[in-house]
Amino acid sequence: QVQLQESGPGLVKPSETLSLTCTVSGGSISSYYWSWIRQPPGKGLEWIGYIYYSGSTNYNPSLKSRVTISVDTSKNQFSLKLSSVTAADTAVYYCARITVAGTDWGQGTLVTVSS
Amino acid sequence: NFMLTQPHSVSESPGKTVTISCTRSSGSIASNYVQWYQQRPGSSPTTVIYEDNQRPSGVPDRFSGSIDSSSNSASLTISGLKTEDEADYYCQSYDSSNSWVFGGGTKLTVL
Image (cartoon, rainbow over the protein chains, first blue to last red):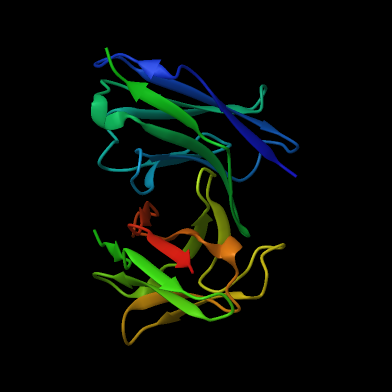
């Protein structure tokens, strides 16, 4: 049973870069697509983007200019960087594994953007 | 791009059947698979339906998915409602660039 665990700072200052890492255990990252999704407090889900283990990516057009998703197969991890953050980027950030039989989600981590 | 529109909330009694709709604003609902996610309060989402009507292992057969080209919508039907089904439900599909599109979510109350 694969497990995904998000990690990173819970507080980021406006205009800075949000950085999160997702550690995959119980399975290899060297297959499947791996995604980041976020959920502002009390609101719905927003897809950020995904990466294939080989490194090819696809980003939400509304965030594309600020997002970078990367993968480190040696550490079984993938990462999210979101630049120039504002209060509107405050959300629970989920990492997820996309398979042919559905999506497996991490538990999520709250990131607050505030000075 | 297109939008997926869901009712804000639905409610039904235990043991009954409820259907949650997800209407695609443009383009055919049949052109890209639809997934459904359940999010219980305080928890992360889980997949209850993938590829329009497939259930992941472990999801009870009380959950079923379908698409209707005439209304350009997908539906999630939950039969034999239990109090544990009370949750937010989100539909999700893909656009022509394989970018994900989520519906706004539906709050299911089982009362």
